[in-house]
Structure formats: C-alpha cells, structure tokens
Image (cartoon, rainbow over all chains, first blue to last red; front, side, top):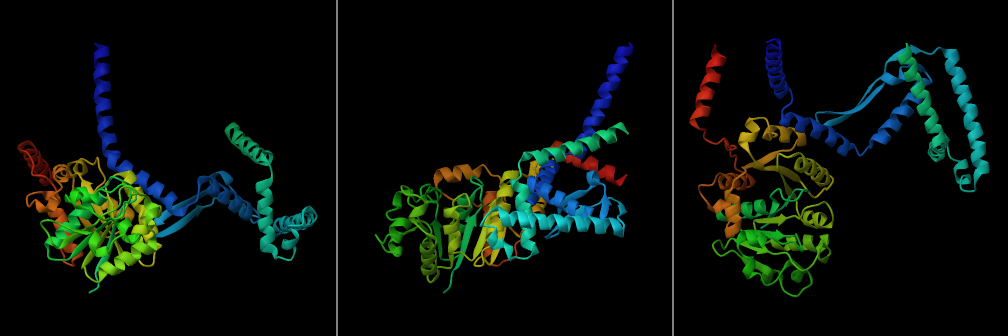
Length: 170
Length: 270
C-alpha cells in the first residue's frame, strides 16, 4: 500500500515537473538562445581561444595596479541593440599601493630592456625593429610568448589548479 | 528607363530562393511590370523548370558572355505572360564561366529596357554569390525559421552590408508553419526579425501547393486560392512601394480548438 502511494506521489510530482520544464524551455526558446549566442561569435570572428587570451592579457595588465580575483573575472561580448559591447566584470580585492606598483613597473622595465638586448642578438631580422617604438616591442613580446613551447602554459595551468585545490581545501 | 536590379539570396540552400524568384517575378509581371529573371546558378539551373520554360531555352547567360549570341536572343519570353522573360543559366558549365563584371554589364544593359531585373543567386558565399550581387542595388534575403537558415542569413546580411552598391536589403521569411509557432516549437516571425534586425518584406507560409506548382512548372502566384500565392503577390506589391499589411497565416481551427479557446478566454476573465 505504501509503495502504491509512493509511486503515485512520484508520478504526480514528475508530471508537474514536466509541465514546469515545458513552460521554461520551449524548443523555440532554446533555438533563440542558441542562435543569439552563436551569432555573437560569428559576428565577432573571435575564437574562444583568442577570447581566453584577451582575458589573460587583460588580467596581467590590470594586475599591475589592482589585486584581482582571477577566477571571478568575467569577460563577455553582448549585443546591445545594434551595438556590440564588451562586458567586463572584475572583482577587485584591493588596490595596490604606490610602492608595489612602482616595484612592478621597475621590474617590467628591466625585463623589457633584457628582452630588447636578446632580440638584438637573436637575428638580423629583428634589427629592423630596433628603431621602432615601444609599441612594436610589446608586440615582439607577444610573439615570444607564442613561440615559447607548451611548458609555460602547462605551468600556468598547474598553478591555477593549485589555487583551485587550495580553495577546495578551505 | 532605369530598372531596379534586385538579387534574391540566402546563403543556405533549399530555403526557397528559386521559388521566391519565380513567384515574385511572375507577380510583378502580372501587375504590368516588364521583368527579367536571371538564373546565376550556373551548373545547377532550376529557374527554367519552375517557370515551365525548360524546353524553350536555346541560349544561356554563358553564350551571351562568350558572345555566341546577343543578349536579346537569350531572353526567353513566358508563354502566358509576355512581360516576363528568363535569362537561363548554363547547365553544363560552372560558376567560373561568368565573372562579376560581365554580370554587372548584363544588368546595366537590361536596366534600360526593363522595370525589374531579379537575379536568382546560387547558395553559398563564394564566387557565384559575388557574381550575382555584383550588378544589384537591392537584395532580398530569403530565410526560414530554422537555426541554420537564420545563421546563414546573418552571414549574408553581413556580406551585403559590406557592399556599397547594395542600397537596401529586406528579409523574406519562407516556409513558416503557424501551428508550430503557436505551440512554441518554432521561432516566430518576430523572433527572426529581432535576431537579424532586418526589415521584413514578406512572410510565406509552408504550402503543399508549392510542390504541385513546381511539378507543373507554374508558379503558385497564378493560383488565386493558395495562401502562399497570396503572400507572394503581397511581396510584389510591397516591392512596388505599396503598404500592404502582413497576412494572418493561422489556419481556421477545428471545433475542439475553438472550445479550448473559449475556455482559456473565460479563464482570463475570471
């Protein structure tokens, strides 16, 4: 008898669940939402890999001045009427103080100088870039990052995993 | 006289470009305009079949381009409607047999003698599309309320917007199934218009009559009773500048639905 009631109860429950789900996600709604997302990607020509890279570069840049919560940083493209908008939500833990920023910038300048020297020694091709301004130097940096083999990337992943693990432990 | 050159395109195949071309062309001609239909789907020609002209084609667009005949000789006049002519595609050649400049030149010549030049574009976004669009200043983008067709239409709209010579483009939503829209199983006309943010020029219901009309080689606009024919005639009138309200495509309901409706209405009042 108990079983009978239980199964009946479950059936009624599942019926209402189904009805609820139908209301929430009709085939038309699913189609609309999937389409909107895919069109956003189509219209920008930015692949997920490039978006991820842009996200990381933005974090690196902002981290010089602010202490950020890397995991919660949210970067998305959204359609606002006819205009495409880049939505960036950054949880700031705290602003770094002047001393810290100065140190970071100083370290960076030194690193740039070293990079420049390396480039000069590297090949003849890079000589053409010698006279060019800082902008192009920063481009060279990007290239270097690309050329570097997978090890660095893996290292980054590992460190991120470690952070996750820590969080889990807490 | 300076005729209007309108390209009918879609990106995706099978959404009804050729059917649309044949029907709008026929409707415009019936309304008294001088119309030429150009089939640019070289290698896969079908517009001749839909118009029932397949046995009367002597010269094709490739013959014109390669100067084996004059443009005037290659235009096939419709039996019933002398206002309507077809410039057929070659069936045994490919898309490289004609280039964009040559098509542009043909359109320029036809503009002088005709009110409307409708260019039926092949599927895809490659050479064939680039050729078809070359001579046009207006476009009709045909799509259906399916995800893949809408996505391809969006791509086509992007390409059209990048072309300076295209002054305006309009959306034609084909194969709409009102009962599926009502049950929330298919995207509605409003959904598609919102997603593509394009102006609508027509909504054509799915109609089995299209199959029989294709089989007979007679465009459905010639059938006064068909809803799809009525919808295409309205598109033609909108192209001519008339302000025509969109059809109510919902089919008359059975008695059960009527009773259901009554109850939902009553429920709303209580």
